[in-house]
Image (cartoon, rainbow, N blue to C red; front, side, top):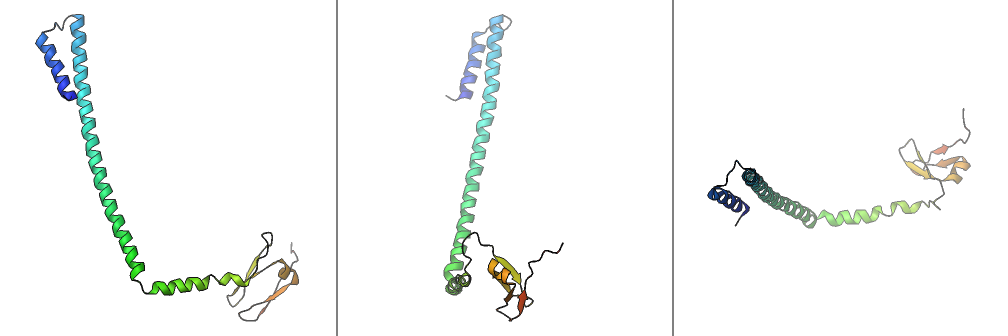
Length: 151
């Protein structure tokens, strides 16, 4: 028996007993049966809403799963079917060697950077700064540094 059926049964029982709703006890029982009916209606509405929300969430989950499958399948096809992937992988391996030419020393060493007029960016350390100049490996121009602080 559902809660709605139980509430209706109690209402029918109260009506069948022909309680005097003018007496204190009768008023109390009638008010309790009415309250129980109202609570039952609200609870039924909440249950219906919960079921509707649950159904919507299930549909959303299915849609998201379909989107995820589509995206993952698309990415897999891009990488699996792409003949250039091997070339990209080889280029990546070559790029890893770029930083090997300059030893930054320990973590306390300050590394400076300067851009030559030719566009080459050159990294150098404190020792090179103190020497006062560096030669651009790209164009051969001599770049000079000044340690004097102009105020």
